[in-house]
Length: 204
Figure 1: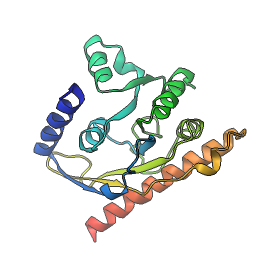
Figure 2 (figure 1 turned 90 degrees about the vertical axis):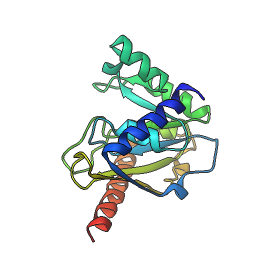
Figure 3 (figure 1 turned 60 degrees about the horizontal axis):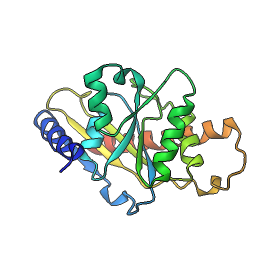
Figure 4 (figure 1 turned 135 degrees about the horizontal axis):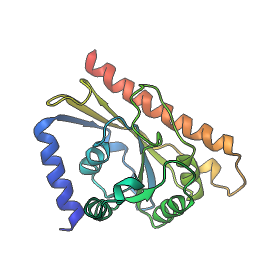
């Protein structure tokens, strides 16, 4: 059993002590080794740990480069299959790394909002669409919601949606920047629809 699997077990047990975690949509996980992009909304610092520990396959997350500046933390993050990205600009190295991971048939984890979003409104960067289309892969939307803003012993809902097919853009032709942004916006809107559905079903 490697480091990632041990870490997933430990994190899952730890989170299970403090939160009631409800997951729906496992049936939507693609049965493929061809690789895809897993996208989620982001409102709490431990969202990557939450998804990574409860997802059946290994995820390769894009993580802010500041996490890698500490020797100890940077080592742990790398062991968990994450790689750095500079959120302040267009990080071409991170994009190339992400595309390479996808072309190797692995699963890339991205938070399209770029940072924690507490506004309750969808926001996104164009990067997720750029990466998915350049690698010619599809997107799996995942929504995270909490009934009490992640307070201790509250419920956290993880909803895995149906795959978003981007094959119409996989022709290799030139795509305007505005189109990439529009695709990313649509992905994020879909994630928030999943989130709202989960919240309403719990309140109903």
